[in-house]
Amino acid sequence: MGLINKTYDMVISNGRVIDPETGLDAIRNVGIDGSTVESVSESVLDGKKVVDATGFIVCPGFIDLHSHGQDEENYQLQARDGVTSALELEVGTSDVDRWYAQRDGKTLINYGASVGHIPVRMSVMKDPADFIPVGDAAHKPATPSEIGEMSKMVRFGLQRGAIAVGMGIMYTPAATHWEILEIFRASSGSVASCHVHLRGHGFSKISGGVSSVQEVLAASVITRVPLHVVHIASTGLGATSQMLQVIKEARSRGIDITTECYPYSAGMTGIEAATFDGNWKQNMGIDYGDLEWAETGERLTEESFNRYRETGGMVILHMIPESVVDTAVNSPLTSIASDGYIKRGKGHPRTAGTYSRVLGKYVRCGGLTMVSAIRKMSLMPAQRLETRVPMMKQKGRLQLGSDADIVIFDPETISDMSTYQQPTVPSRGIHHVLVNGIQVVNKSKLVDNTVPGCPIRAPLS
Image 1 (cartoon, helix red, strand yellow):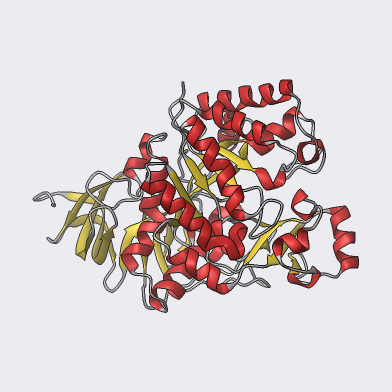
Image 2 (cartoon, rainbow, N blue to C red; image 1 turned 60 degrees about the horizontal axis):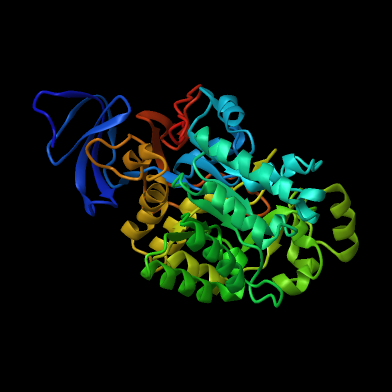
């Protein structure tokens, strides 16, 4: 309801307002004071500034649980795709205080991170790499004392407000099942979820998708730590349906497990990563020609693969069947997360286009309902985190008292425009984006010199 004779800081008028929590889907006027939604009303509202949303959808800002590109270049692309909160929850950081301090007062959108097993293992085992391990952290089993030091660092990161615990077991294949269980144990009691890149791919005989889910599901049950499986289609491949069935059955038995996906048939990773050790072609069901060098767009050969493996860099993997992507995106179990990363204009189109692609390809041109899509991109991510991070109870919603993180878009034109060759082309159809009540996108253009992004962080203990 609106207040009589009240003048709001901003009013969004005559838009189709969708709140995925209450199910509201109707023409309404939204009144904002400061960083908070103070009214969602059928009545006309007065505002110091009025944004006419006639013909547009007005909904909660999108929350990306899996965003590696935590810098200005990536934040700008994500804001133009409707993202108001970008969270690094898979790889995470080993130094939570430092990570947040580096971004304090400097960001376009909200930001946050997990304490990550990968960087913690790299620190303890003195790995020379700066993001994905290439030395002992990838290839050497940890000693009991090293596992103890990792667990200590994870517990300290949680005390310092890390949102979750990140794990990338595929990148640390030498980590034993016991080590993984010990990291889950380090999370126990914090109500933090573990966000896990599984150990294996698809139907791999050694460690396929189903057995990889079973590994972390067992650890979750033993420790009673909530589990979140990242990008299920890109690790599940042909086994994605079976993995989703395992997750559904576990949830039906009261186990706290969730998952996510992105709407693309290619993944991306560092070519130097342990992912490409051993029988990677058999495990992923691809060959050299299915790899695309992100820097140049060239498809690889055995010779160029070996050459680039020596130098390192990002490679795009064309490996996920379109039918698997469709299954994952349409599943009621999945939230949407980009797994995005752009560096100096190079990378995967998912950073710039994930959310608009869902709204264009899967809603306007597919069978996913608008309300379901918005729920996957806002409410579901917020609910995954809100037990650990109470401030998330005010995000992912558009209702009285919610944070004014808001997206206004045209449902008839919204589309992803980024491609594998041109990954930084902004999405079309996103007209306005508000972060904490401040416009960061106005009439599809970025607002200059605007840094309203706030830290998303768990309470310190």
